[in-house]
Amino acid sequence: MSAPAISPQRRRRAFVGAISGHLIEWYDYGIYGFLAVVMGQVFFASSSPGVSLLSSFAAFALSFFMRPLGGLFFGPLGDRIGRRATLTIVMVLMAGSTCLIGVLPTYAAVGVLAPVLLVLLRCLQGLSAGGEIGTVTTFIAEYAGPGRRGYSTSWLMVTAVLGLLLGSFVANGLSAVLGDETMHDWGWRIPFLIAGPLGMIAAYIRLKLEDSPEFQALAEAGHTEKAPLRACMRWRRALVLVFCIITVHASIFYLVLTFASTFLSNTLGFGSSTRFWFVIVAASTAAAVMPLGGAFTDRYGRRPFLLVTAAMATLSMLWFFLAAPGATPTTFFFPLMACALSFGLYASSTYATMTELIPTRIRSTGIAVAYNVPVAVFGGSAPLVAAALIESTGSITSPSYFFVATGLLSIAALLVLKPSDFERSAEADRIAQHRAAQEVAA
Image (cartoon, rainbow, N blue to C red; front, side, top):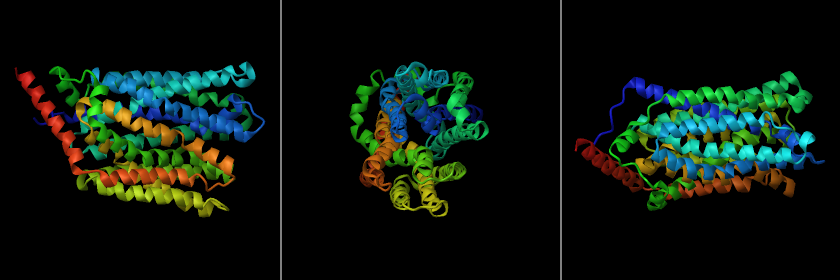
């Protein structure tokens, strides 16, 4: 049975609706990272700036460890009740929790209750983000159809970068306009409060979308998976492959888009203007090459491209840290850009690869589980691990061991990835579509 026909108008509406919500989701989730220094000072009392920053990064990392739990809840929900409804729910949860951070009392006002409330809201953000990625990737991939999944899902990564860039512009722009003292007093609240109305608009747009045709066909025939988590256990090899492929995706993502900002200022001593423009240029470069990489793998295949770019990412992260001692803005620009370019190319096709390794009936659940765990372990913890390694060893090159290890793990997975891994998923979809067609015809 062929994929259900989709009008260009419906495809475009679904794409814009999902992407716009994803942009806001990443703005909401990422704004904390750009305000990590201020949040450490406001919510975590310590005589040591390093300890305050570590505490702030710990709260950042903790929210990532909630992502697998969010995936375990919302992933199966997406496979049972549909992609659209789940996307709307996680959008409301993210926007609400982000907005509430903007009205929290500080440590100076209520003491230890302040960081407790902050951590609770960051955990809610983590639950939302964990439910978002599997569902929105599945939604976009199923609307794109075979032959365009690389290009279409690459725009999710572009949107994630743009959401973080939006957060960077808002946070750094406010810092420049208001000054450090005002940002510390109350200015930090504004970026979080903006999330409320933006999130509600995005949730409304998502509510008006139609579910993906592949899911609708299964639902109409009564063939949706009733126990997606249990069914995922029959796809352990695919889940492990996705887990390992995502490790370097996760680590280099947060190296370029969150940790680099703090590293440039706190460790290398670069000025705020240099830090701002370096991160903006790096993020923009990564975003610019993502659709190109996705389109390339649609035509020529995923595995060889991912293998080459994973090696590039590993080497560029090693260069990033080895170039740090004694670095100047001129000398450090090139290793940072190497990381940005290899990140953009590698991340362009990881989402499409996930959707093609896991069949439709459990796709939202499978991606949510296999993606969120490595993101929590190797992505969200990356700034914390890097800062802790520098603090404990006194060497600014020490985080290279962690980041290079993530690259080697992904390279190993890509070396064992086989065409039959994709064929097994495609065959499962063909069988499910055939049964659904028979049910509808009957």
